[in-house]
Length: 313
Image (cartoon, rainbow, N blue to C red; front, side, top):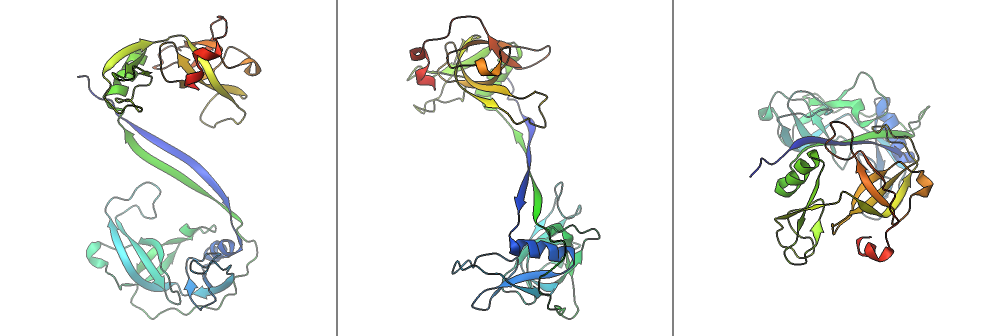
């Protein structure tokens, strides 16, 4: 059996969100070294603050300053910090109930080792030198054996309020395609499309999945399909992706390769975007050294009859 492939993959995108009045005040406060909570109608102080009471669902906007000192309520040790985390040396993730608050805030605790961390440990905020109005304005917490700090009673009103944030989301993982897709990828390197046939319903799945999603049985019989195919459905892309050097607008389509029981997706080129249509017959175009088709182009054949691909929509 050939070696199963694997490769590191990263999924990353920046998430931009606007802030309501409560979160805006909270993050602006961090920029000014002030920690704000919000007081509910029954007298609880929630930190971090929320705009609606989690118990009664009432809207709450009564901001109140709490102390930058507090108590660890629970914790977990992080042996290997990852890229972008608060500290680049091992640290503890802690829930800290700040003095004056009734709920706990999740953040990092700078400690020499797990033996130095415990539930009930007194801690204080270590502020970041450069603060922009984000949760990272709290660089971390650190152990503290002094008296509880006294909040200054800040009303939560600031000049130049923070009104929005950009939160980068990133997932790093290792992808192993498995036996079936390893064979599919290796065949693509030879400019062939290979699927697998279900022994029960006889459908040919491209890309193969190792099992039939309809019948639930394993698939092992390899079947070469294509290279020609039929556009079943498509969309016109008008927003340029940062990591793709492709001018917009362009067309992305589902393509049923001849002999396949499932449509795969690919970009359509070699034809004006507004002339792409369902039933268009296409073929793959490979670039030098590529392991997969760069795009599909019209073959010049007559369009396929709808009945030949309607089950693949």
